[in-house]
Image: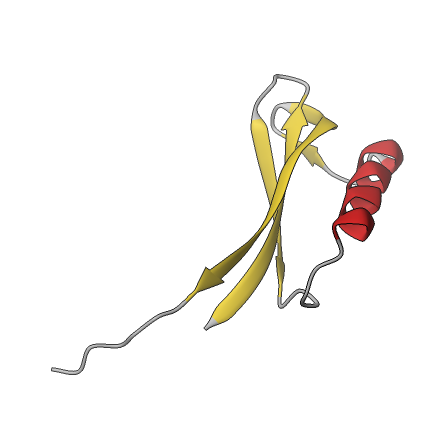
Amino acid sequence: MTKKLELVFENELAKNVTISLDNPIYPVDPAAISAAMDEIIVQNAFTSSGGNLVAKKSARVVDRTVETIEF
């Protein structure tokens, strides 16, 4: 089982851009995540094919379980 923190932003073309982080500290701190996303936008830390990140859309923790099937 692996967890990822996905930060979803909107770029200049109004398209969603997702940044995924492995193994987030759990439980997550919504205020810290919001502040970090604000700082990413202010610092222009990332860009996308649709331009700079301009707005926060959402954040989510994705929990993925993989079960191998033996033959």
